[in-house]
Amino acid sequence: MRNQSSGGRSPGSRKRPALLWLLLPYVLFLAVLPLVNRVTPTVLGLPFLFFWMLLATLATPLAVWLARRADLKRGRS
Image 1 (cartoon, one colour):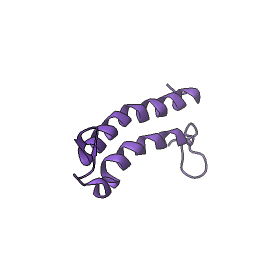
Image 2 (cartoon, one colour):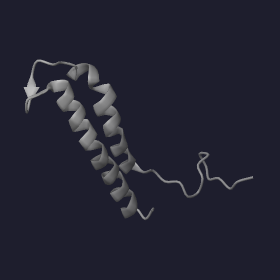
Image 3 (cartoon, rainbow, N blue to C red):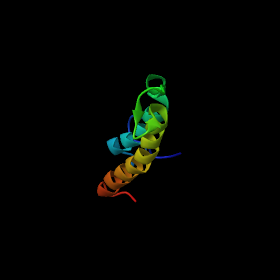
């Protein structure tokens, strides 16, 4: 049987709020999609929806990097 502290969590587990950065791509791609699903405003000559998807795609590696950077500062690798 495993050693577990109160609450059913393993002794080495801690809260990791930096991992909330990983919700950013989900929100940009799925949750906000019905709100930005339009063609008429153009940004840099692109339909708005296409521009939004491009922005979300470029923000994904940034969110992963921010989460990893904060996790490494907490002493995890």
